Length: 199
Image (cartoon, rainbow, N blue to C red; front, side, top):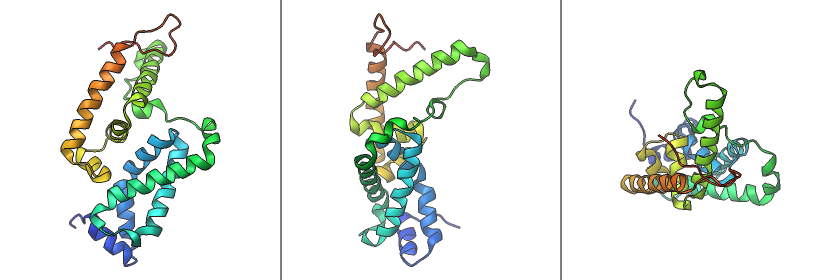
């Protein structure tokens, strides 16, 4: 069976074919989750926000003027859903569990030992702070690419950027991350500063 495009899936969904909307959910679940995590910064909350965003999209599907724009339209719904959640529940965010570093970083096997794991965790925290320090336009695309491992085409489809814009943003973000991770040296207490990354 040939892969249906978003416009075709939206049209089928509007005709009551729930499996067509299920296909849209499968296609965009990584993007919506990553976008939710980008806004709320917590694993459990991001899952809830992603589910609420898909429910809102399903209910509002009739308002979408052009099915080809489903990805960017869904991104807007996700952003608004996350903003609404934060407005209502922002004080609860500190009690949530952040995304496990193992999801964001590829770790070597268990032979690296406890000190190796501690160094990896410290590096993971430095990388997370560096990503958080990126300009807003870069941050979501970095999360989509490296946390959710989406292709340039999938990121472009979700964000509404072209593939070449996505590639350019990732290149600029990579340079910025390298600069952030290498320009900061550890302070005497080792708190609040970046350590240069050794390759």
